[in-house]
Image (tube, rainbow, N blue to C red):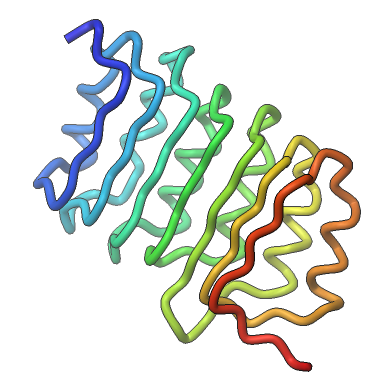
Length: 166
């Protein structure tokens, strides 16, 4: 299916080996996995680095998608938009996204207990190309958020369900 530009799954049994087959979608620009299989760690995503038009990736609702999955995402150099929610990632995993020099937008959400903290914001504030950040289900302070002042292109900040002291 060479003309497919958007591929979305919800509850599929697609695993890492199956994801590698998506290299045949030469015009793929947006890829979304809602509630992927328990065998989907995201490691197979690294093989999609050969897709020059792939600009958007979303992974949500996966207990198997961990920091190793974010390491694979960090190899997709053309990405401009990354959304990850309700996965088993933390700030160490976000560090792999520093390699994405064209990343414009990121959305990160955790399930309580929040594992997103000031360390994660320090990492995000080092991605100078970010224009939009959306954070939810996290525990942050004003000092944590102030790190984002380092982002010259940031024009949109969305906070939802953030536990923050007065």
